[in-house]
Image (cartoon, rainbow, N blue to C red; front, top):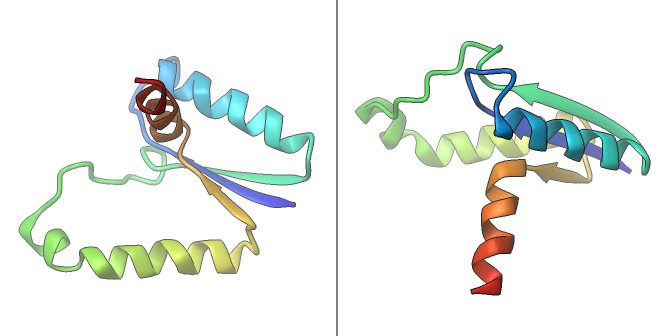
Length: 89
C-alpha cells in the first residue's frame, strides 16, 4: 500500500504535526508513505479570489499528486480526527 499524508501547520511542534507523524508511522507499517508538509512547500493558506475561481483545478491537482505518487490513499490527519469526533456526537 502506498499512502500520501498531507498536512499544514507553521509550527513543527504543533498538535497537527504530531498527528501527521503518528499517521505516517502507522501507515509505514502497512507500506510506503510520503508526507507533504504544505508550509515547507511555501503554501499560502489564504484563499485568494483567483484561488477560489480555480478551486476545482486544485482538486484535479490533488488527484494528480495521488496518481503521480501511485498512492492508494490520501490522508489529512487533522481533518480525519475532526471527522471521527463529529461522528461520535
